[in-house]
Amino acid sequence: MIIKNLEELKKFAYKFAPLLKEGDVINLKGDMGAGKTTLTGYISEYFAIEDSSSPTFAIVNIYEGDKKIYHLDLYRFDDPEEIFDIDFEEYFYPEDAITILEWAENVRPYLPEDMINISIEKLGENEREITIDSGSIRGSEINEYFSN
Picture (tube, one colour):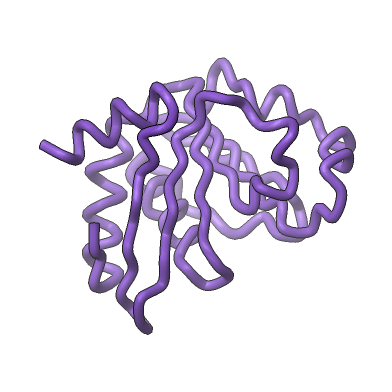
């Protein structure tokens, strides 16, 4: 789907967020500046979380609102083994939260299989193409919802 501006990105987030449930892991894929953190902010806002920011330096931010969200930015991980420096199993297999990952490809061998993979491709200054991958159970369920 084509998103033309921030308002449309927010509408997408507000349509996507109610489909999420505790235990979901969302993998946001896209180049630097594609809108991964902005989309995470809108999803967080939907769940009454006021202050969400990029966890680039902290690696993990935990947001508390109507739902708990773990937000991980794995950009700085040069070696997949670095994931052992954090309690990754709690974040990759959450029981009471939703996890949103950025730059998950940096720790590919340790990722859960049933993630919701979302690609954000920058088409222009404000225009993006969002693709939800149907290659997982949850991704397929959510993609089917957006296809109707």
